[in-house]
Length: 308
Image 1: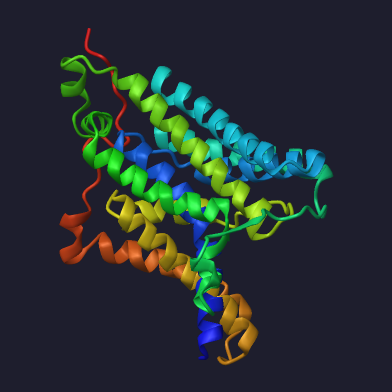
Image 2 (image 1 turned 135 degrees about the vertical axis):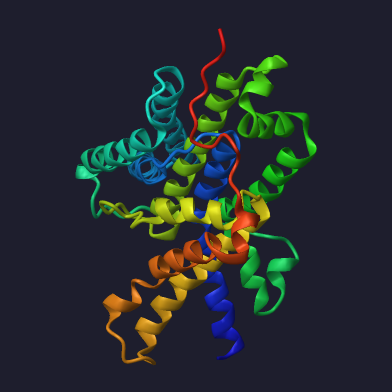
């Protein structure tokens, strides 16, 4: 493999990993607060179609991205109200949110299918982007950079700030956090809103940059892979970044193998590689010597009822 081809594969991996990373980081914060939201796929789809619709109508990428973020956060707010105020089952509510988001995105996107829009503009990093060959890695759009910055920011927030400590305390021991005066439900609701906003942002990247067009169900299961990345990462942001780039690389690899014809394997089987990789990783980390190292937050998925 030539150096040029290797750099091209790395570039494609970065773009393929970005929507996974954005959605996974949002869900990671939600789960560290003790809430399990399985509606990531639905929120990504809603963000994708909302951002694309605004981009198609106005041509304003900033407004399109903000709309996608707001759309994801709105669906997350509905989920938060149901599971925190009405104490509905988090698993069932998350699945319902995915179904609702899938149907809503199909409805909104009816008039936008097949419309082309300009992709997000590239923002070359001074000096670094001028380096021969590898400089192409530093000529990305704003959301690729934002995803990398978000990893560092969330890692710092969770580990080094009082707010991050409180959020982790709410996810590990909600009754104890409540007993010393922390508003558990409010903290969890804000975490859910953040997770929805990040999922909407990941969806916007798909429809505005990765493949600047709208196609029904264009996330193709990426929301579920983002959920798997959170578990794979043991609820740690830097590991989530590694997981996102790993799964992004697997996606690119199967596309490369299909296009090159190096292996006499039907393309349908190659298309299964990212999902087979997800199942394999989850199987490995849920059993054997890895199991103890991947323990979730103690209160994950458990409803909080303030003591009377």
